[in-house]
Length: 145
Image (cartoon, rainbow, N blue to C red; front, side):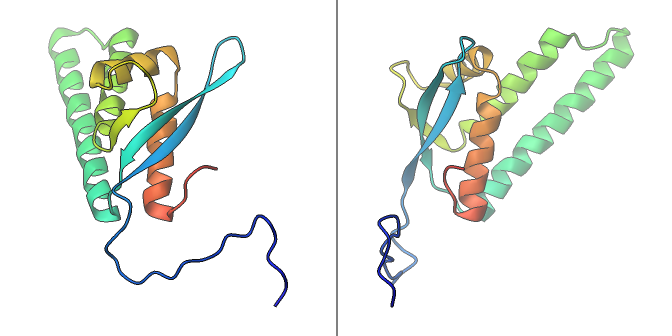
């Protein structure tokens, strides 16, 4: 056989379904407004496809229910949802979904829902990238790009 390159990884034989990592790090790069890139490493709880798909479905159902209640309120009052209210609701919804699988992070700030929302407020698209990266890890078994 040809020699292994330096980048090739030695494979380990899987002998049991027991022993999958309970948590794993998931680094997410963030772009500052000055153009520099920084990184937050999230500690994620490993879930199987079934559990993760249920969490995602609850997320979708909550968004649909919220949308229906907004429409009903708008019809009743004649006042449409304001942009800042829609943005706040979307941030809270994505932060709530992230709380389903994230157990901590590399920031010195406390890890909680309010600080996740603040992170998204300061670094837009962070939660969407985090959710997509976790989704890829669960459904495709891939971390990173």
